[in-house]
Length: 201
Image 1: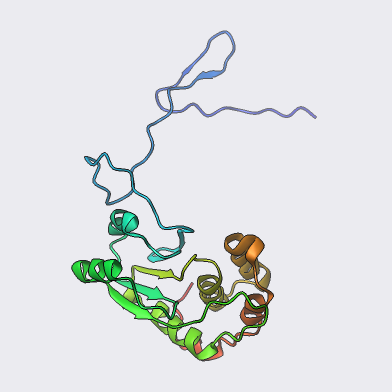
Image 2 (image 1 turned 30 degrees about the vertical axis):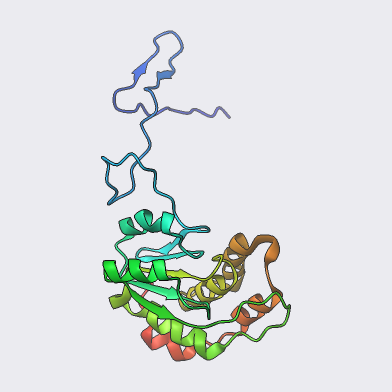
C-alpha cells in the first residue's frame, strides 16, 4: 500500500521546482505578551513555577518585585495567598496601587510526610476561586508546588478530572519533592458541598 502525503504551502512560501519542497520564509519574531508594552525593551519575568490553570486563573510561587511588570499584563483582580506569613510590604503596596484584593489562607508548610492539611481552609479558598468576580486571579504559596498544587488539584476534581490526571498535574510542579500526604488529601477531598458553586466546565 502506497502512502501519499501532501504538504500545505504557507502564505508567502514558494515551491522549489527541482525538489518540490517548499522554500520556507525566515521564522517569525517572538510573540509579545498580550497587554505588554511593545515599546519597552525590558523583558518580562513571570514568578517561579508560573502557569495558567485556565482562562483567568493562574498559579505560581511567591511573586518578587521583578515579577510585577509581568503580573501587570494579567490585569489581576485578586490573589489567593496560601502561607501563614505576613505578605511582604512591597507586594502589599503593589496590590494597593493596582486595586488587587488579597485573600490569605494560612496553611503551614512542612516537610513532614504526614501533615494534616486543613480541609476547611481549602474549602474556603475554593469558594474564592470559584467566584468569577475575583477573576483574573493568581494562586500562590512560597514555591508554587505543594499548597498551590493541592488547591488546584481539588479544583480539578470539581472540573471532573480523573484522579490520575489530577495527580499527574500535581507531580509536574512538585517533581522530586512530591508529598504522599498531599496526594492522599486530594484523593479523599469531598467536593460534594462545593458543586453548586462550580461553574460549568
